[in-house]
Image (tube, rainbow, N blue to C red; front, top):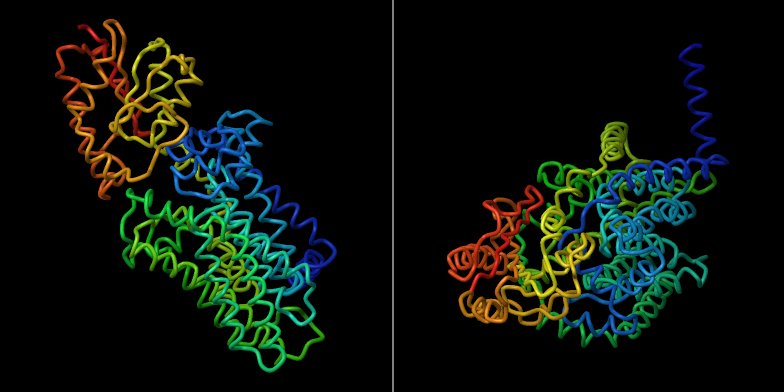
Length: 538
């Protein structure tokens, strides 16, 4: 077979995949995503996942009030509550809800991009969503981030539909509903809402006459209604920001800002994140400047160029304003975490798709190589090394009896500790639990209200005396400690955790009332948590 014949067949196959074969192509991408994102569904739970499962075990209508102690809205926890009741609370079952959200991004990306952006961009969007590392990782974690990413994708895609002259009312209504659900799912959705308003403003600058008035009317209406529906939660959010905040977080630097955006596609390396962001935004801008085509034949090239520029401006504004709003907010009230970048996934994926389909060969080749590398990255090492107490609990659970005391010096670790002690056969209902702040009667979540002040006030000696005074002779005390040789311990909260870890270990090891059971600690590195088991001698 000649080279020319191969080329013709490749072109014919490509046209078929973009036409009648597109549903099959999306199905194959979905299958690829399933394989990629089910390799580590049984990974152990870490701190935040233990809290997720704990909150989900509250009665359904008690969840919003319980979250006053934590700092997030209730929608994800309501869904997780129903999910765990249906499928159990094993690691695999708990992770599977996020898997559903991550997998849903593949057909959703294709459906949202197909009409306004054309078949090539739609297929590229589905491919990016199928292998995006952020979704591979958080699609196997019991947190709301994969759900937020799906909502972000819906916001970005509906922005490209809802303000067109021929848009259906359902697109505008859908945008409003998705914004409301996002606002009731994660606090950072406020920044997505700000980015959405800014995207409407950016589009206004590109429109004229009646088109501008139409965009203004629709944009004002949808954001006003969404804001009013969310308004009842605003007092709780403000109270959470004042009372709970994020004492474990740092005030973000510019380097952290770049890493945050890049973490959606390639966590951990500043150079790769800069390159990726430049490819997505810069390559898309070049496509717009070159007047690339979006919908295909039958439209004037000048109108095609305007449409592409509008798409790039709207998506870029949505992405950049969302991230910058989060950055500025965290400078004033630190609450920065790369895992919160799910709010940026939607415009990020669609910008990648436009860049893939509408730029030159070098940019296309670079992004294709990038997507292929994403497509073999199962995130297994990261998912299985998250600081879980599971190895420690597996070793020590059988040695605990009713009335024994478990003290977690890393306070928010306690829900995960109790989860694994219970699953490993420890008498969870008969154990007494405490943190470095004192006795903890509800192990389902940690009370973050003014937590840093309370932690500073809880001196190790006084707290230990109060806890140990209630322990009878013969009972046991399990001291759960984080491994300080790994992780970041430079924030106000984590620095205090590190100091208290050293203090509590020395304090209990030198207490004459306690005898260490065994010659070595119950160790679980590199997962990051270990235990010291003592017997009360009196």
